[in-house]
Length: 130
Image 1 (cartoon, rainbow, N blue to C red):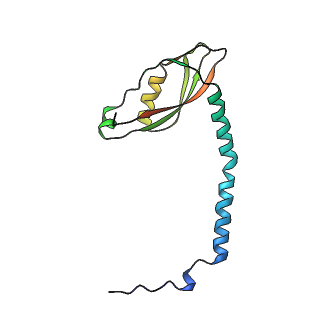
Image 2 (cartoon, helix red, strand yellow; image 1 turned 45 degrees about the vertical axis):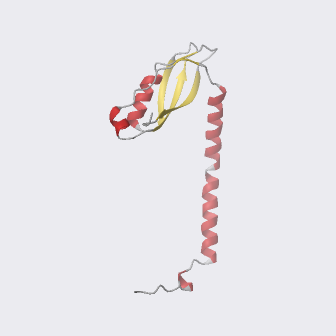
């Protein structure tokens, strides 16, 4: 059997290297602040313009994905007309096959009328255990 020997001092990270690495990590995380603040502002815009859903069509869960226990969340950017019709659905994230199914269903949704068209962000959940 081989004995494990202690790490020599030459192989331990030097304090200066640790300081530089820490500074780099902090700098990189700070670079993300404006983008995350912009995203939070965008999300706040969507939340303020919430509309009451009047008619909802459930998305069709593709049987192959359900059988394979593949699920997840699809994020959609939805434009709603003043009359309450869904005018545009843009896929923001998620499994492309699930996103297609979610998009087709959401295009059939109906919202209450409003003074102007609005945009909302929707999360459509696909849970294979349901």
